[in-house]
Length: 123
Length: 107
Image (cartoon, rainbow over all chains, first blue to last red):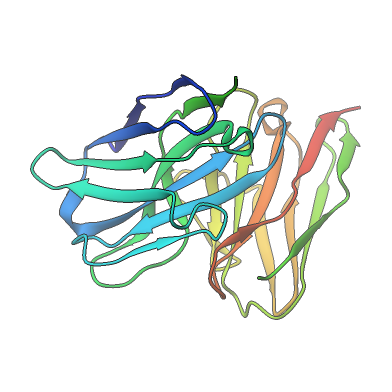
């Protein structure tokens, strides 16, 4: 079965960096684009970033552009989110999620989600 | 950026009752709309994509409809496990955006 497992969350001071990872199993990883979606405590959902199935292109929300970098490692079946210059507004549970469409198209819907990693930015 | 407005914010119903949730887009999204269910402490779960395409394992009591700017998620007869928060999400225009959610609570 499809499984996504995030790691790397924690408490970090404003202005510092943190790297999240998401390990994938149960599907052909190289066929699917992957997203990060976040949820601030008690709030709704916000799409953060997307990387194509082959890593050729990445897209970011304006709120994180220039600070966050999404990447993937096909040999390790992982997708990562490097977060720099963190602010208190970045405090959230970060979910990795699989794009519903496999292959060379992007559905923009999220059919499998990890359990989430909590990132707390606090002095 | 397309804004999705969900109503009502909270729906108080009893098990066995019918739930009707609304999602309205600030501009047309064609049929590029999804619905998710989220329970406390859990990740969201995809219910429908493309407005009415039921995801794997979703019971038939759930139905999705609509196109353009107005969409509806209907739960024909609420089961105890259906009490949760429901989000709509569009992918017609970049970036993908979510509605603010509707909480379905036990009356």
